[in-house]
Image (tube, rainbow, N blue to C red; front, top):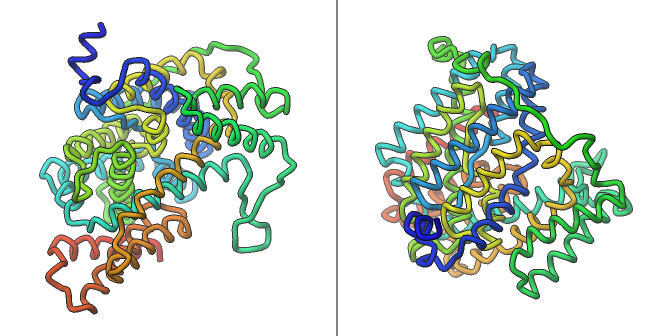
Length: 434
């Protein structure tokens, strides 16, 4: 078995071991486990069956993540993008669009992804993105992850009656447990303890029991729901109505930019990027991501995308697709052990996410601060990823700014023709937000 895994995933070449990949895979699963509750609940509130969607989601996570692992040998796991889930839930619950048509819109967005991915256009787009912006994307994602962690445990909240973020209730048990977990995480990091992240999550979960934050389940096992009634409930023709184009754009553009931002950001953390900030074999990652979206639509599941939480596995030492295989195994078991998986509180995963975000800021040192046309778009990318609460928004602000600055500085030759197309897409995307 060991030799087979070595031959398939080239563990020694990447300087990793089966044990190291296992710990990384479990770490990725634990930081992603919140999707087991959030996604089915969001779709359930829109009228879909929660239990059916949970089973479908886990099945899709396992299939698509394993496809990523074996086809690309990268430690990237996939799951439904929460932004896409929110859009689809709104389409069904607020806009009165049928679930069948919503699934059709998801499907066609996936077909569009596949078309540009298999034609190599997505990889071409990534290659024309300036190196400074690629590093900024990684840093922006880092701050975004850190903010997600801080918000998930209540350390940072939206100030009531004010348009800003502020500290939450610092005396609440959830915040206290999260702070204890963060201290443990820092000690583990400084001491370079193997498997420090997963140990931190486990210890924090146990500590949470005494604070009433970790709630023990009434049962450990649960049986998955059948999916027969949900599979292929897709209105392919109806989704092509012109009226649904804004929803198609709203699904497509954020996922497009978020995916390559996540892949580049996590890839940078793993040390995969070359001197030009490109990720070798990124086209394979895009192909899996594109096919995953259309496959998910067949089950009525919003866009499957590469998850930011994959960075947790990378930070824990994951280097190859074997990390993602172990993550997939954990998700497969979670169908039967979901009550046990769901006892892990946000207070236990928040410290890990914050530390990962901090570490991803290191890419900012590679930006040229002597050139205004480089560092201002980079700053805008990072700032608006946080200010506008979306990775795609940060990128869509930075690209037009980059083009305008290059034009103003008389450096039009540095602008690739593809860049004009990207800026046009960004403007089209903003048009859907107005």
